[in-house]
Image (tube, rainbow, N blue to C red):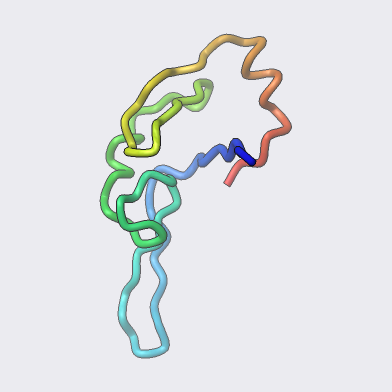
Amino acid sequence: MARIVIHTAKRPHRHVTDKGEEVWICMCGLSDTYPICSGKHRLVAREKDDEIHLYDQHGNKIAVVSDHAMLKALEGVRRV
């Protein structure tokens, strides 16, 4: 079953392990090494908050949704 999950974060989450090692967790959803950050969040830095950017499974942007009716329809979609 397909799912739509909207990621709104534009940078990774820093996690420090019990051994004191830093691990950066992907929050944008585009990482090539998910769940570890690969730096692809740089692609989303300039995205506007009132648009939804659609990416394919390889992290290539395929569309931008800025239509008000479509955004309204997606209001209830889980955002992470």
